Image (cartoon, rainbow over all chains, first blue to last red; front, side, top):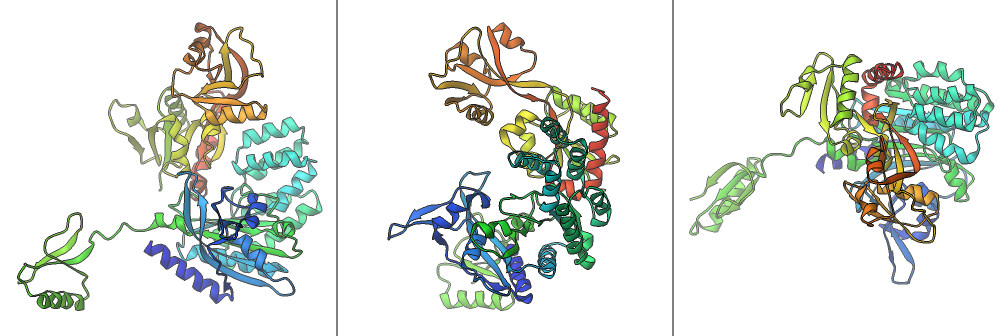
Length: 354
Length: 212
């Protein structure tokens, strides 16, 4: 865990440098907040208990909802970061787990500057772990615009987006045929799903797909934000298979990846739709870093539990033993004092005091 | 150059798929030798193959122990691993079916007892029909269940239908057609994009030609 702690510390410092303030929250909140927005959460299962006054409480499965609920309205931006434990069901063990998460949210009137800054912070966050990261970006407005052009009913969109998320071109093409989509729209949906590459490589193909204002606006925004990343732009990849739930997210979204980890370690984007659901009229963008995944990157543990095992006899004066141990520590070595060697622990050297 | 790690399903399907990969330009002759090795490499071509239990392929790929793998659609529907499904290889074709005793008519009056190796698929299918069922999870010899009265029907893979026929069973409904799919870990796909898409295109092209 030490490595993860260190990275979390560096992330906090990074966000502070950009003027974000820490959002601290209690371990539990009224269940209502999460119950109303279950679809927004990664897992629907929430750990609940009844408080002393009979209210149903939840161990927080998420931080973003609480931030939105407590954010003040009015002018200006709310820039907050968090570093909290959340409680979720892990898909592998089907039990609840405590997961360390860091992230930031920017609420208010989100303009290109704010979006560029958040994307830059996402890139810098990944950089604190490895210089060899990839940051995938996408724009939900582009895919949605294409579905508009194909007159795809709301009910059918979810499935099309799910196939796009799997990069499942054969199934996507088959579904488009079943729905009787215009051939050209279907071909572009398939093309969009297969696309993966640097903005400079992919953007020309996207320009050829624009059919309506929604797509044009999405493409313009995507290009503009990507351009703001400067040198770090080399880590960007356009990928339209990252499709978050459109009931909450809208517009620009992104995911971060590190080599050696089996899944994405950072996820974020614009979620104005979630704010509408919570009766707010402004906009928001943010991301979360799944710190628990980073454990996998850590170096193998130190092979020794202590540098020195200091053994003493029954008749060795205690003062002598402790002094000998202190002497070792002054030399910068860790020391364990015992009468006999403990089982299952490893030491660099074993010494005896007489 | 980095290796592409490929999980092949043990058995006939895996061997067939390996031959396809070899023909597509990713051979690894040592894999055909009779020995107890588990991992086979071809440094020159940058591929590393290993055999795993067919139901485990999704897990190996989801957790990035393998960059890509070959899994039947049945496995993908049952375990729903978070992976990319890049191509339908069109091999290992069969159907996921509901089967039961010949001539026995199904009434909606009772809770239907369903024996299967695929509880998720069975549950999803019957819930789409708003039908209440009792799932009996078995690990093999599914066809035995209706014969002994353990279940009313089975949900299982049917390839030729011969086993059903010989045991006086028949297909009642087809749930979904099944075939082998080329799947990829989502992160590997990004970091080894050039290598994986090149492999995928070559293999897919061969499949389209109907080489199998």
